[in-house]
Length: 616
Image (cartoon, rainbow, N blue to C red):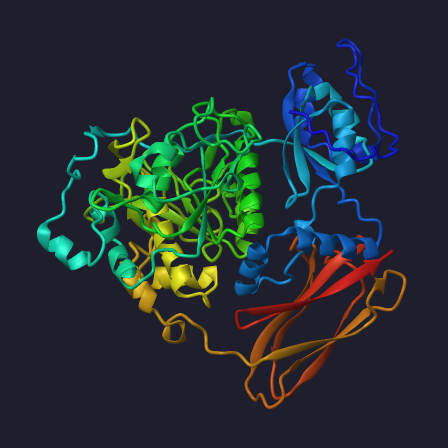
């Protein structure tokens, strides 16, 4: 699909994209252009194969001309976000509220690519890049475009699949696979008859949270999946209305997520776990919430751009103001072993989908993702993006009705040593909504269904505790889970206890650090900072009257949130102050590129910062 944007094409001295004859020897690239091509593409270029391949094209910037123009663009990006999105960021203490990643891609760059007939199939404003398809012979010409910073292969990873589904249940009147006893119903349900879903929810003490008045009201949950065939007519969804503006198909680039060619019904079953609301038959874990549906998968085929679509879905969820993303998708080994990542790269920040999930979390969204169903396969580790660190994403494993880890549930840790999964929920012999008919259900399993069940509980906690950030909600669930005292890499911190998490008090949590004295970071100037001028001067000190030793760190971050340089790290005491300077250079001593930077102060789990503009 070509992107055609009504913007005047930049007057760029762009090379021709006409492929050279097969027998021709390609001319050597200029050094700068050659450095922009990932070495992994060399084989494809040399092969002369005319078949189009997908590649990432990372842009050098977002078209900003100078600091004033950049500031204006940031203001425009803020205005483009929904009030709900901005409110969520404020509640989550996101700072700065809007940053460089929120800027849209430069339209003139997109138009320049489309003008040459390049097929733009996916894009990411957060990562400032697009995916295009073209013959490998045209890659050297692409790398010479002045606005291109890097051309890299698109990852070809395989999606994690659920175990084979179990039997279909007779329409509506069917008993649950393990029907609850009368005593269980009496203890667990005061006002709602959960029907066939009682066992799945009771294992996490979700009914007690509902009975406390929290069913997800006022929360917006984005479900990212492969399609939602059959959902509009199923009895479990007749009390929810999802407007077209809350539905998006990132595969076909439209707003139809059900009944489409290549779409599936996996998302319908996932949606039922969290949103179902047919009392007496089937009730989800956050049936009072609002929902947005994102289709990002082509079912049943595997395409290399599905991870890109996932990121587009996450960016859309952010713009809507979604409070939580529940995703039962994930990726592990590549279809082409030559392109494969290794377990070492499941480190929480390498794969495209992992980076997108990490940024979504940094925007104040609680991301809940399946840990994967690879536990009994040669690749038995967790899948991306479940490798994102614990304080930014909840990776969910699967257990059976007795709390025993499912054999298929992937395990950790991630490559950086972070315990994974974080938590576990029912993912064996679950009762699930079926797309076969408006009153049909079936038994199935997988971390795909444990994930939305747990995500619904997290949604209710977000509703109940509006002063808690997503990371605090995740911590409350971990510290009150079934094996919080001894987490492991098969079940994480265990099965959450909804009522205990609801009553959890961060002030008395065993792992909460004592309050730290307040630091102050004062900017003396100059700002803007010129590379050829005097350095930026800052003054760091404890608040007046503090008498305790306290540790802090001052760093310079770029507009994408990446560390450029640590300016100071240490401890202060007794009203002490120190002077700090920055000369506009990175950790290696090289001059940083002109643009927007943030000087951050971190202490005691808190973080604040100030914007700095670096001029040439």
